[in-house]
Image 1 (tube, rainbow over the protein chains, first blue to last red):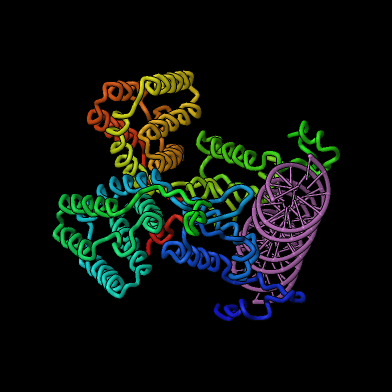
Image 2 (cartoon, each protein chain N blue to C red):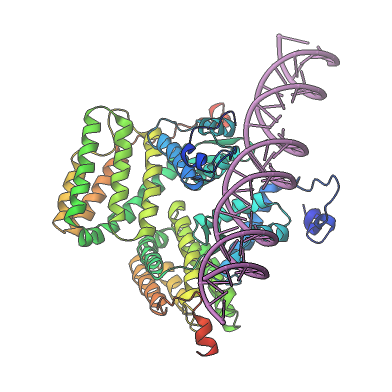
Length: 248
Length: 248
DNA sequence: GAACCACGATGCGTATACAATGGTTGCCAT
DNA sequence: ATGGCAACCATTGTATACGCATCGTGGTTC
């Protein structure tokens, strides 16, 4: 299935004669891959809030037509990662302060509420996998790879929710984590990342001890700490900077 | 494609001879309307779980091309109201027993958790609107209009969640209620509808008295009662374990 | 010199055409 | 008569073409 991989730089860019390159055997897989690429780029802050996502450009980059891109863009919009404005196209969502509060309140309720279930169901295998994720996150943090750390942190929280056994709530938590990543991009202070490096390890300890209550209260404090670290000042930009920057 | 559909003729006339049908006049609105039509039909059990939704048929019924229908179908699929199978098209989702459990567990957590906030923020105006909805629901129930009653019940729960002030969680509850409606269609006993007729009124009473705790426990019992009324027998069709039936 | 209007370009929304896939049916061979 | 194979048909997936709205730019007028 990789044979098609080189279409981006190949002759595909040309007009191509009777070139039917759309016959990828793994069409669905392809879309999923592209979706993940864009999603990851947003979560890792490689695409910053407000960045415009032109359909043509994306279509060319990924070697598919605009139709497929639109589908992906719509999915991202439904997850609130991109904003679709009627005649203006797509752009990376810039969460408002209200949305940020809603997201963290929701996480507070759902993630904490899930902890007892997780504590009850967690296996030693799960514990090992979680510790591994926490370790990698700490390493990324120490190496200064903020983007990577943010993604790993979101993945950790999502994974945790999956262990509860409730797929619906786990998917919801996954969306909330993605949005949190965006919120960090807008309101987070550089240098002071969301999750403390040892927090996740402590949490794993409580879960391993099957202490759901303790884990829940810890998670609550953990999330509160992240939220408190944000500087939600609702900085309205849009044009005014020029005056300020170049001196009036 | 067969005819112009007498939609916005008024403004079209002002534009002189735009023989093209005025699709743009209310394009987004139109999609929203169609989305609601299909969504309502599913929630009201006019479209039953398992029903196939052919793109061509829908496109013709609503007078738009398949492109628009696909967009709507995808949105419905993301809300788990329809299932999209790769080369087989769309059909109304038939929830599994596991999904049903997940959905009701999620409702238990979120709706109950929201009650304190609702009790704190509710206004007399809200109370009046809720009572009105409850009344209409009771009337529909008494009149034997089960479809209508189910939709009104879901709307009631969703409205309640909106009063919490958390738009994210409210939207999530809305989805859960829609899915619950599907679950009722599959596992519900005819004649014994989900919500007891007086339950909602009682709940409003607790909220009006700003007794969030009481409302939460009542909501918990309410949801438990609905779930208990289901006959989740997991009647599996779909290749009914020939192995098991005919011995391994 | 500034403001307003007009014209052109860019980019999205929709429709349509085409290709590929999976199901179904009919025929042939065993 | 039954099972397998092959061709056809129905339906989706993808790409492309076209129309329209909005935005930017330049010219003209006050």
